[in-house]
Image (cartoon, rainbow, N blue to C red; front, top):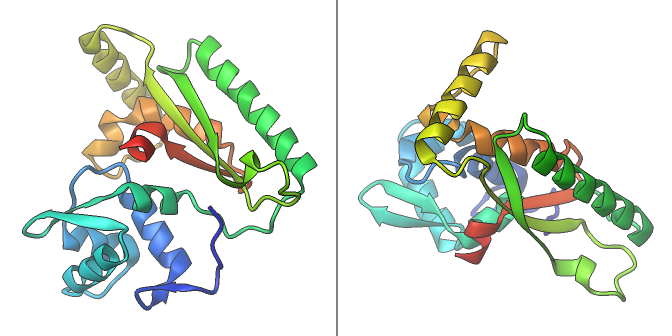
Length: 203
């Protein structure tokens, strides 16, 4: 998905909205206060902003002051405002991405493995010479089948990273460290790939 960096969503700069939802996308349920913190909004304005985002189809209300990002919102968090790619460049980036997938699945350092990769949007159209970006969704599951063992390994990884100075913003980041490490490695730090979680995309 490609977005215009000068556009707005519900009256707010589109890049600000994208950044706020990116901060919340790994939290199943969050409050208007958490939205205020993620977007840098004045105190007390979060609830009205949440309603505006819900009207745009990006989030939905679960119960009183409890919100979650919906499928369209998850896709939006992966959107890019970067310049369009040439197809040759996009194909090279995609090949490098698949090399990272192979690395994740073979390297014992990573606690998760990629079981599914889906390519969608403009790259699937052979007539598109300059795709906006490379839209991908990945399914990441634990390498360890036993859940208790997996949790123990995740906790050990968290402690290792904290020793190295990494800061976890909340308990969700702590619990999903194994997943986030894989996701961030796959993303590669570049702007050419819009990466989404396959399970959210398919929901």
